[in-house]
Length: 99
Length: 294
Image 1 (cartoon, rainbow over the protein chains, first blue to last red):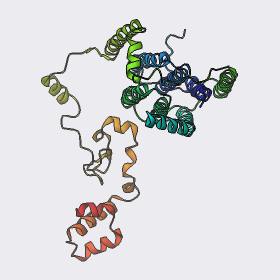
Image 2: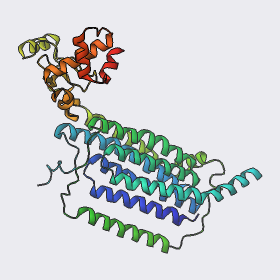
Image 3: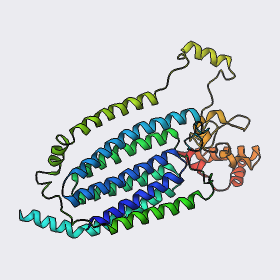
Image 4: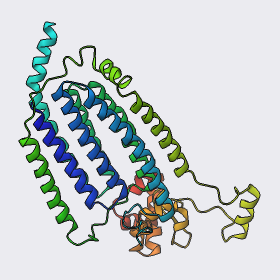
């Protein structure tokens, strides 16, 4: 299998995640779509690692996972704080910084 | 050496099958994720995508990342998502109202354009032939990764540890709730209870009701339902008020007659003609009869 297949699959998953970020209203689902985009980039990194025959791509994918874990922890804590004060997890309701 | 070569040849033969299967599964699960209205369904479909990506990593000669994907992403991150969903409310669904006109159409068009652009770029790129990781993984994938991680990327590794500690602290600070009022003592609770309008305990669910489920509001002696008997969270999520509709269509006398008939049929003491008359009126013994019999 050439890396092209994996890269196109990664691009498709990344785009689906991006569309989800654009259209969904629930902040948690938006977050999940961001996770999907990060996973898609990881797939591209891992397939590039195999194409080049060294492990640097896998190391970068590993660091992406670490950063994603940290991001999820802080992001979900922020979502919970917002939900506690506004009783809503919709991204449309959090507009205090708008004007 | 020979068995490994044979196994490698078999892996290469099976790779297209695994790839196409997992590509179809992961893309349809990802599409379902953005189309499902319920957040819990989206989370479960995201688990499907992550697990199929883990298998793809294993196929791509990255066994360590495959296990990390299963343990960290599917095991920890997704369970965290599910925890927060339970806290926020499982039944929370997205509204289908578009606040920006034509947003979905334009997002889909932009997505199609973006994926077309990326695919054209990838297809047009002159990629070198796949080198394979047989040489890099000669000592084992974990040893190879560790060698890189603790030599070339050791600074990034240290920064990542600082990031993780900061994230843990941040989560604790953000999720912490300051106690604004002092904790109520037993004396204060007792005072508040006797000064309020309910000195007695609240009615339990299912008391004088036809079922003993917790979402079944109690029937008060006058035949009305009591919303106080149901947990307020359950009452908010389900329409508990209409649980007794089977009683509402009939008069009180009829309902009481049915109940008496049910009790008599269950205890086998339906001897007198009056009770038999009522049983005929009640018709076939209902589910309530059988439950009472137990």
